[in-house]
Length: 404
Image (cartoon, rainbow, N blue to C red):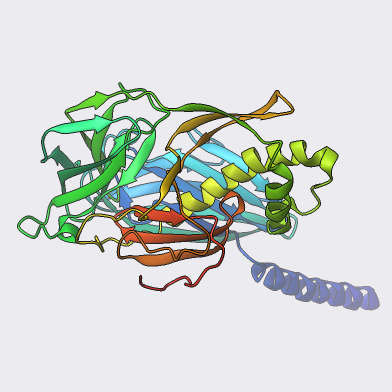
């Protein structure tokens, strides 16, 4: 009996030691991690919470999210009551959550500081212990909408043309510009063009694109960091334009033009330039590569300088012949049959071979390399979203970053 008692005592002590060690070990397992994606700093009328919760094996026993302000707590999300939230299992151990948290979703919100609080826990030791974490993000509730108004007058807008506008946008930290239908053109401080009398003044170049309806709405907008938006209609008169249409047989030059483009374009490596395959390869170059090049040019435009680098008018290439007009609607044929349709978006000026090309105006080189359908190509940024492109060059004598 005494031996049994000793064994029992030993087992109890051993169990306590093992259990204590297991409890200690379990308590040092990683807790769930919380990554706030939105909002960064501000909450407005229509702000949304976006967050990622990561936990080993994807096990969560608790996930509660609330927004606290002025001593009050407003529930946003609970694991057992998702309410208006959108959840997405991005991986076995990662849960994405999105939920509106702006004034429209939580009417009690007031301007001023607030805090987003997240409590998350996961089970360990077969559910006998919970590993919990609290994550917070301090935000500023901003409900007053920004202001936007048009200053300039007599906006005569030509379809496919470049236009300019002066407008006012406040407060100072708003993002602003011009919206033409679904296209946005960024605005810049008026100081970029020498207007220093009013810090609220902004300017922007914009266009009613060749492929938009003349009745497309045009507005100036201002968006603050909280996502609150203001807009003002641009009173304007739009003028339509009939663009050129042309039919271009490729028979005589496709064998000369396509192989060099394929050879110099990594995305086209492997495309056949055999005579029988040239028409098909041409279509890929003329359509797919054209779209890729257009995207590259659009990305370069986003890197424009916030200043007007030129002081006088732009100068066209001298003694040049106009080879193609802007927005020429082209039908391409091979052996008398239509094989493709595209819109030519350049204004082609051609001179004799080896003639030095002069920049149209002062600027900074943002591209100097081979660019698909444009061949050897230089793109110069003149600021405020205005850039010029020089293509089909026999050689390039500048590099990115050069001032010209």
